[in-house]
Image (tube, rainbow, N blue to C red; front, side):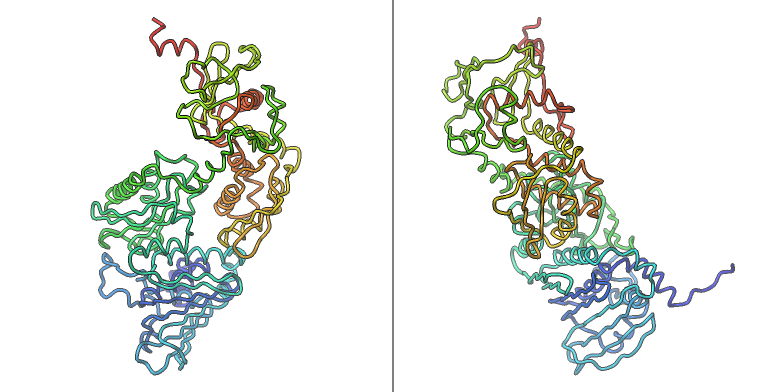
Amino acid sequence: MSIRQLPEDLINRIAAGEVVERPASVVKELVENAIDAGASRIIVTTAGGGKSLLRIEDDGHGMDRADLLLSVERHATSKLSTDDLDDIRSLGFRGEALASIGSVAELTISSRPAGAESGLRIEVRNGVRHGPVPQALNQGTVVEVKNLFANVPARLKFLKTDRGETGAITDVLKRLAMANPSVHFVLTGGDRSTSNWPAVTGTGALQARLAQVIGDDFAQNAVTLGCSRHGVVVAGMAGLPTYTRANSLSQFYFVNGRSVRDKVLVGAIRAAYGDYIFRDRFPVVALYIAIDPAAVDVNVHPAKAELRFRDPGGVRSAVIHAIGEALAAAGFKASTSVAEDVLGAFTVPGKPTAGSVPGGPSAPAYHAAPVGSFAGFARVSGSGSANPFSPLYGQAGLEGLSEPSARVEAEPAPTLAEYPLGTARAQMFDNFIIAQNGDSLLLVDQHAAHERLVYERFKAQLASGPVPSQAQLIPLIIELPEEDCLRLEDAAPELERFGLYLERFGSRAIAVRETPALLGTSDIEGLVRDVADGLAEWGTSAAVSDRMEAIIGRMACHGSVRSGRRLRVDEMNALLRDMEATPHSGQCIHGRPTYVELKQKDIERLFGRSR
């Protein structure tokens, strides 16, 4: 076949394949145009997940007749005053979005500039322009896109469901709103509940906008960034190391006001938090980079979602320094969710809760309560003693300690050699069990160990059928973003296999009616949020079955005994016995060891007694 020149309409449709990937791509291009036009208020209306209708209304500068006609031509733009691509200071610059959209949808543009007596309307159908004709309109521009990809059915069938496309549009507009706090954004339509993010200005405007979009919880559990280094200005907010998510979807990156994906920035965040969080957790970050436009190339991706830094090492260094400095200034501050967990772990000293289990070292006493919750075990207040050993019930040769609360009393115990993990002697720092067998001392991480036990029990129950559940006396209502509620609602039938029964409670909340019996009264809200994060990462509710281990891993983590929980001797011994009977209990589900064993000769060597 000989080479031929492609017709203009086909060229536009080919270009649309790069620029117009889905309805959310159209929203991004049109809202960026509105921002570049100086809009202070932008209203986005959708229907059918954006496939039936997208309507973007702004109060920007507007266009006169000449500009309106040129706006739908390929490679016609007002964004570049010169031919210098090394000094791009606008969000758009290629001038191909409207022409590409007009080739795959019904496009209508109405606009009125300041000082004009009336507006004008132009239509594009299958790449053919009609108009302009007069149109009553306030100052600004209104763009309507209907029946996207109707003339390209092959593209249409690759789109997600209306719900999926609605969620993608929400995500795009959230990022644009985060990048432009001085602009009022409204997202509405018959296929969604309305989101309204009023403009914020002045000191603290960025923090206020992030609180609007991400949530007050993030604003309360994050530090403010502010650093200039190597010609790079770093701003934004970074979550505390104890405020994390199960995936990286809550990490937002902006360079010169543009939302981007960049490996340099992702790696910098990972390095900045490397000493503070586990490898399977992700900090929540909204990172803003301001840099000389000549030092960054944004013309490397059709949708301008990726870029290239001239000095990536300098950018990485600036980000790591800014986050490290901010976290250091926060000192010992922890997220509010951690504080609530700790406060909830203590009750009146010596006062058992309902359903307390009788004392005794045998395993049946431990199994009498739900494995995940230690329900009914008495807990001891953390006040009154600075000694690192908790006030246990029993005696184990610690009479020499000066403070009465540090003594443990004797208990009938089997021969030490009978148990590989020995018998419990004390609890240290409210997290580590000190045990002794025939010739060894063992330090056991109670949370990591119990997490593995709950995980293995979940697996065993799933293998024999649905996980038994227990009904909540009063349903637990959890507020979540609308897109998370949609994902959980879709996945609800699959989640019932795991003993988790959910249903929608309005547009932005989930009601938890039943929970896995293994979890008892543990951190159900944290579990539901983690499952929602997982569904967002996996993409479809069908992935729940394929991700069984990830789901029960999340449940085990939230259902295991927490660090900071004081245990009695019988509770600790029961945990040790279960570890001995459970496969893989030598490491937690994250790969960390659950106990460390020191032989007697190793301890003697520490004191120089082996010579």
